[in-house]
Length: 174
Image (cartoon, rainbow, N blue to C red):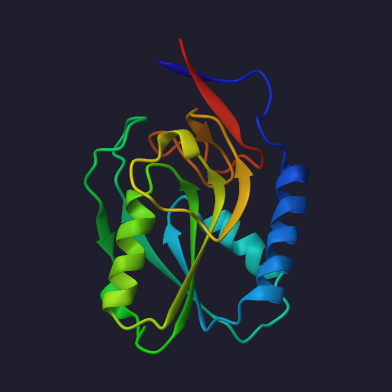
């Protein structure tokens, strides 16, 4: 069993401030064609990120990439759907995800995008758990560095619960 922490790890106000900063940095440093966001955890982050971006001409699309079931540990098996439906050849891609954890998901996705013909790929994550990294992968744009804790809220879930919370909370084992 798990319970939410007594207070948010990252408040909604801090999230919004940081997302605006990231959007400004991306606007200044990367001219991309497509925002490719992973579902389901990154949907709120992606929505807020594009609201702060200046260029309304960017195409936004989503893929499903998951390695979690109903637990707090990755299964180690990445399931990806929707990537074959996107015309990536010759495009510059901004790949957005919620958490960079072991690095396997982002490493696999960037490899798949390169294989599909993307000419430039930059990665953007809301949170980075460097302590969990098992592959050599680092995001180009990072919102927050966090410790190795299981987090929920702002799109992230535990067994499909907690996604709609505006803050990010940790789950503690009871």
